[in-house]
Image 1: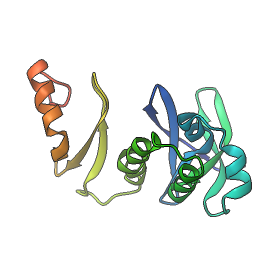
Image 2: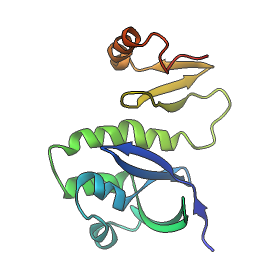
Image 3: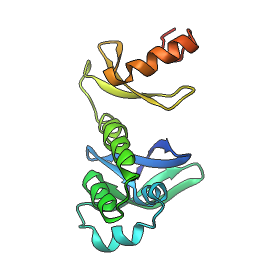
Image 4: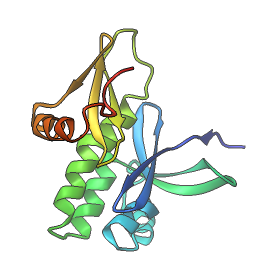
Length: 160
């Protein structure tokens, strides 16, 4: 039997996007990317993408196992170009800024190496960096952090 992978689940627009790391390469479920862009992409993935951009794999689910088509980061670019839409710009930024780096960080890291985290709270998830026992936030996220601090002084990003 083929190896079964445990996916990491991301959420955007009230939809799930599963991804996993295979041989230190991030892969996401093609069908679920299609749900996010409101297109059926599996036919394109199976028939048009090169074999190094797509693969089939078994993922665990709540009810057992499921065989799905996965695409890597370059495959994502091809799909987003094929189904071009101005709204996909923000989706691409989310994928390249949060999803793919989070999946890459699941690789075995040397102790003390920085790793990305996704902090979930009341609002949208925020990307953080855990490095040397400290949580770091991107400078662009600072205004949001300050605003939420004024609203709720004991906010979710603080440590115990």
